[in-house]
Image 1 (cartoon, rainbow, N blue to C red):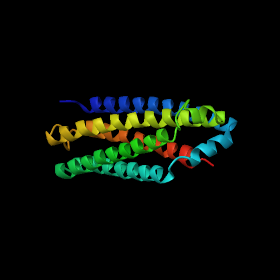
Image 2: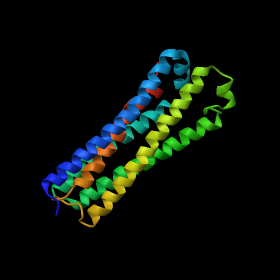
Image 3: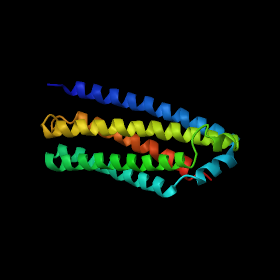
Image 4: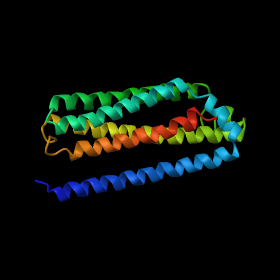
Length: 198
């Protein structure tokens, strides 16, 4: 059985990992800012070609899922296994909906020849090619993090179902929740940078 010091170590390790992820995306956001300073008009024009409705919908989906993940941790700490499983399952479903929306959004952009080094972007202003390059890199990397977060939620779901995660031992679910909150936090920055750029 793990001691309280083990759980503290696990928490510290998770926070250090999350910090490294923040540095990764922070660097990409700084790169975005540098190019935005150089090509403001092209970035604004590129942002107009993104679907703000889908972007806003995905923001709401992640915010709701963050709430349900946090609620699942509270539920398991109060000994409500069934409620915790339902909330984890709903959060996982939100991740699926987010990825499906992103799939259709990317598909529409490819259909309209809006992807890095496409003929439309290569022959257009250089700033737009950079804008969409950053868009695909950052949203693609974020999508990968959503998939990782969903995997952690799925593992947590199984562990809760098998009573491996319970009111006395919930570090796995708590760490999965922290990771999912990171995914949400990153999107809170991605959404205005790309979809609401003015």
